[in-house]
Length: 110
Length: 114
Image 1 (cartoon, rainbow over the protein chains, first blue to last red):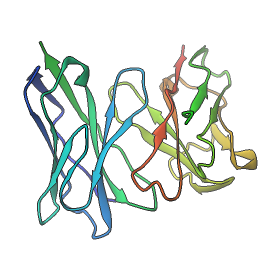
Image 2: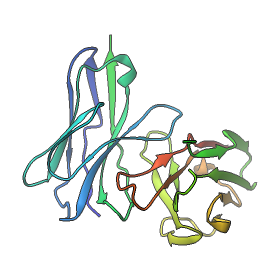
Image 3: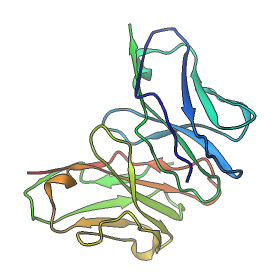
Image 4: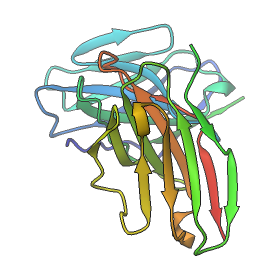
């Protein structure tokens, strides 16, 4: 299973764009990259998933370089409500087994 | 679509007592997971069910933890006897085979062992 490395914490201000990078040097050919968001006292919530290049949805963008050894979650114009822990996971698409690291705690300030 | 339901929401027990958690997954989701999340850490997979069969329980402390998923729907996770280090949030998640982008989690049960 590919291990992921993320910054422990990040600070930002409202209205800024936030980029959280995840390293996954031993990602396998069939692995997908998935990001989850977790608020206190709640279970993690799916944000976005991708395999290569760029994926965008209404919440975030995911950038994956050609070698796929890292990925960057981009949150446009964050608000206080985006304060949460963000997890990067790598795993097989259909096997549905993902292992969580410690995540990145994002603190958005007014 | 109703979410993943878990109960109780909170539980406080003394060490060496037993406790059980209940999970009702999203209707039609064949795969069910139990995770343990200790404060400040990411969720740790304890057990994965596919319908009513166990797919992976390699990280389940089988001397004290047990889980079952009768009829392939609801699931219960039991701890007997509990230790102080079992204090954590126990999360249940479910997914369908074609839901490649992962799981839907419940809100969890916060267990405090004193």
